[in-house]
Image (cartoon, rainbow, N blue to C red; front, side, top):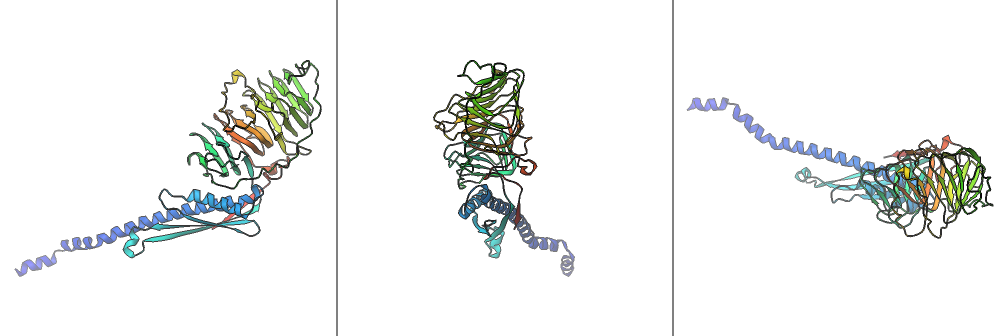
Length: 452
């Protein structure tokens, strides 16, 4: 009997099992704690990213257009909340404040996260707090503003459309819940994207996700005076095939020509392989559209187009070639396209050539009349300047990049709609061009400095 007891005492196998059994809960607890800690670190990183996005969006308000501290705070909170919202029912608390003389915005994001393991230690939750301050060193950049105040799709990118504005901001004034809309394969990339209402699309459509319920922006060019409208230009029959009929547009076919600034009544059409060079100045297109189609080509430096009359509009058809830079001075300084602010009724838009294969775009989401400006051209790569269409609808549905060779392009229009598969590039290299940027949009270099 004594021998058996001694053998049992010398048997260490049972002790190992006993030790393992006692230590197992500790090991499991440590593993759970490590996993929970990793989850907290990941969530804190997400909140920090949201705070950064909010502070940047807030401070950018001071340079997008005339604004105040309240508008900057609303934009900062909207952006941070949108990016911080988790898939759970938890709603992070976001605070924002303006620092300095409208030069900095500070965002604080707080979130209480429940702890499963913490209950054992009587610590049921932990509060994550992150801070971000964005400061403007210079100015920021507004490169697209949809002015429509209420309708759906004030700015939209449908089907496989792409718009790239990585160094500037996209903004929609519409308070509709679908103020900004993206189709399944569309991609919108910008420094910030902001909607006065909501947006339709997924995280795959937007980089970064749009901020919602942003304050509306005043039309930054509303005080810009219209250029003067003079008597109709009269061209001889060797240039204008419609010279004998004053009710028809100026129509230029075949050959190579140079045009002077002036008022082109009933529209201007460049077609059938005609190559037209524009001398510097302002070209008023009155009571008709500007059309370039059927291998027509139009190029001009230091030129601006002003559209007046209900029948105005524009069509750059698929096989056209267009290269334009805005005036460096004068009454249309910095403006590439400008239109009369009032339109009484919508005219039928100019029809693309049947060979282009272009389909009619969906009708606009508003009942008010608008002029239509449509770019289908696969060779409209230089559109340097500001496109200002306060009563117009800009449609881009080409198959190739548009404006990608421009130092900068700014769009301010009633509606901006992209269809099919265009790749609209809104560069913001203002310093590399001597074409001035109109006050209220752009401008020059900008750096945003972040601190946590």
